[in-house]
Length: 470
Image 1 (cartoon, rainbow, N blue to C red):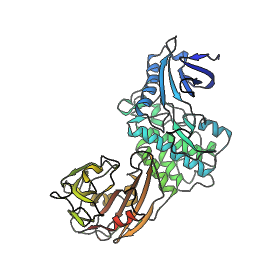
Image 2: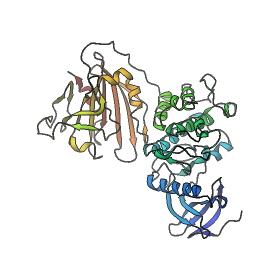
Image 3: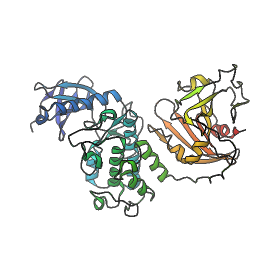
Image 4: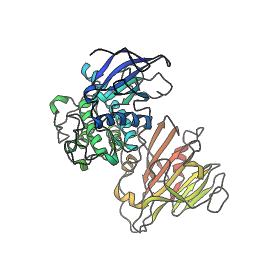
């Protein structure tokens, strides 16, 4: 293959790779004084309008999502022969396929890398996109030397960013079924992707992530290839990888989509639990008193219906400390904070009504929308307590774009809380998720907390100590 001298305004230096649908060249951008990767549609596919549209879809998706865990698009263009090309950020660290060809990684390093890949795929799933082709060749590394590369995976010599690439087969969830061409790479492709009439959703990516995990973490990955094992007893992991991870990979690669984790965030949370198990408090004995209810706060922007007011108004807790009550909930307010009563939208009790919750903050009505404002969302739920444990509930409340610390437990006011802290590169720098089962009632207490930047080290524990049921 003869290298072109130029593609558009970019000088071509060498070939980076050749795939089924495209060729990738290393180019130089004189205006930015930077290297770029230029992906050009393969000549033998240029006549296929469907493939051309897929190629353009990739650039559009990456440009629309514009996320640091995904390969960035700088520009798009068209060659004189009509073939489209996309100018991408150059992943100077190569691909995971290259690294695996050089030899296996240490077990703990490979496990951390799998978590980074899950976090990247979580970004896609949050935007309603299924990748459908998660393979080692589509996991890239870039040196974390730019202003946007603020987090590292610790997977090589120096800080690196793990990037998800090659979305050419990705589709919006609304249009991800009925594709007639085989979409995916054998060995990593979910079984349902072989069925042209199957509905392909995020669980197909979970399968690919599970297969990627087996390739990274199995003591003998080739011994369990191409068919994944059906039992955790069969899957022997490499040194340094906790044994419970095997069961997570087995579930992720289940043949039936319904038996897998629902998406990349749930798989990531399961890996974290398997790597950092925490002791679960015993389930309380059933009681006959009235059940209390509380809605699910998926993220900081919790879906709540505020029925209180700003400090000093009707239904507002007093500014400057004191206590506030909302239904069965009672909280001690930090100095300068007030509270409003809420309904936890989307969470319903046995009587069909939303379960109670409250928001407390120096500015309760601004807290959900303004990342500069500290605060907390607190609620109580009998329906949640009936279906899961505190740790299980927190596993549903992960923040895939943030780094989490190992879960800890703290006993406050008779409640044993499970607490997970997330450190984020953008938005709120720290988000604390906490849940505990009430010792005397069949109810789960939940608190999502954004501590003040200058808050005391024990701010979270003090706040939890003030959460009570009347």
